[in-house]
Length: 308
Image (tube, rainbow, N blue to C red):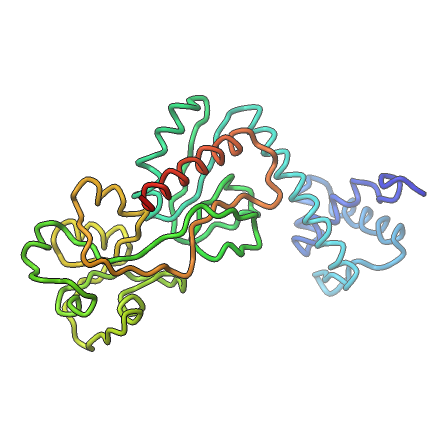
């Protein structure tokens, strides 16, 4: 049986083909690689001879991939990207110990940043970079080492492990609670200004879903305060604008500090949970392994406190 290396065409031809198939232009491929267009045409011709099939259809002033060309293009693109990502990881490990973490604005602000100094004190040689955005970055691009996400754990770009589930309940400032009157049941909330935030996340629990869980019909016209982000909603509640929905692990510190208070004993569990996600093709990076160990311990401590 031939070795894998002997079954492959020359690497030069594959490199040229990858550029030409990605750019769909022999001229642009030549400019990118730094050779002549004739050299690109020659390498493609040799590759087609080797494989015994055409990879491109030559059209007027342009080229198009054949079906077999498309298959080889997908394979070479994946293979070259994997090699590039692995080399980038190796260079990063050799040059520095930077670790890039992605999380939502709310999770970063209320949970991660208040605790991340514990990790930094234990591992001062690791330079942390936190990418804060509510849109999930695609881990296949190799720009993020670890992502913390809320959802069902089913993401195609990485391997997910559960951190903790959550509970959602109404919260407000102590000053607002003193002036709001008696609020003992979910139905008592509809006459108060309810603070909400905009989101496209189907897993997110808003006021309509929360109140419906207790068979409370929300009137068409209710006092309220609407924000763009969850962090803004919590700060509005801190400043006495009304009542927001608190997520256990996001408002835990604010409740402990007495800056927010919980209203009623009513709570619901959202449909999703928090997960830590690592890229499917993650290079075995020591900094990422250490961060995952710390994150699991920190999440277990958080769960124990909320259960207690």
